[in-house]
Image (cartoon, rainbow, N blue to C red; front, side, top):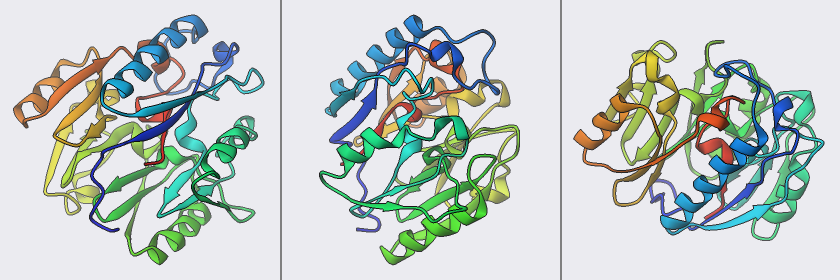
Length: 265
């Protein structure tokens, strides 16, 4: 129900790193060719961190035809018992949805977006009683409006946020680790876009913008990418208990913490 989301994150599905991860899309963060072996090591540590926080994790096999297949956040958006399946925002990623649809279809109604709609799930942030929907290079206005229709039918509010070309997705530069709180990256989002939405906005300096992507659990527990001292101190000062995960190898393919999982409970 609106307002009742408690970040318990009881179950999630993830997918192993593709053997062709070195061919994954990389525009924003990558400094070298993505390394499949190193990325799988980071992915293993990530899964361990989810399980340590009480999440029942299902691990799907990799898809060698899809170098970006580990980024399962993008292939579906959960709305009150529905799994909204988009046309992916980059043509090379079409086809990644199939096995995740099979998994989510066990407990959710599958809804496919209309032709002409594009969306990546990475453009969605859930904040208490509303869905923040990013309109980006991967999510067009038709996709955003399609999702908004289902969101409003379920009793939630919607806020559209235009994402600059400096960021891949909304979740790349924004997350909500607990009720009433947003983390946002300076230099990508402006105060007038989000400050009216949350009781508390924690701003990350542009030099650490990657760290704005976090996974919040109930009890003010939060997963963060390792190696970003400013956000670590800001979150400690705000009363969070922190678990750091080394995401360097995932970052080389523009991936972040939330990108690697599809939570369904």
